[in-house]
Image (cartoon, rainbow, N blue to C red; front, side, top):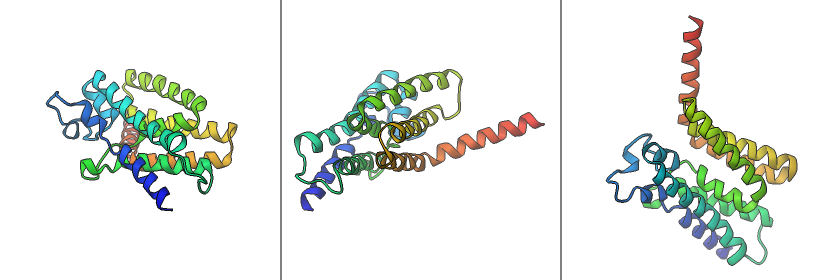
Length: 208
């Protein structure tokens, strides 16, 4: 049990590295004080596309690294309750590290990019499909000036990924993906409230 806890703490520590903050080094901008104030990829994208790429690679990379480490380099002899369950548990640890980073006084991003790195390790084929959808939807929504385009594209990507896993992999795996989706939805509650509020106001205006 102690070895499992140590591995989870390592995954949490890897996830806690704040690449959104690191990507802004030398710019004189504290990403936590501009835009949404969220230290994540989508907020960096509001400031600089080039720095956003750095934040995205870092945040996805740490999710990927955490799972790859415990599955390939530092595996446990008999993971519990199953190999895939253990991998998902480590993935959650990395995402929690990102969302509640001790380096940012237990603040952090929303967890989408880091969870994307997790999905790439566990289900690379389906992850590529889901991430391709994210890129297309994010670009199109941005051009359409869709409110909360980043949150909408991110969350709908995880919904699509969960559906793909349910259809082509199995219910047990889909249950883990659904839990991650539910967590990400909870992390984006403010974005969803704003999106629903904007839609409601638009509907009222159109009815007048």
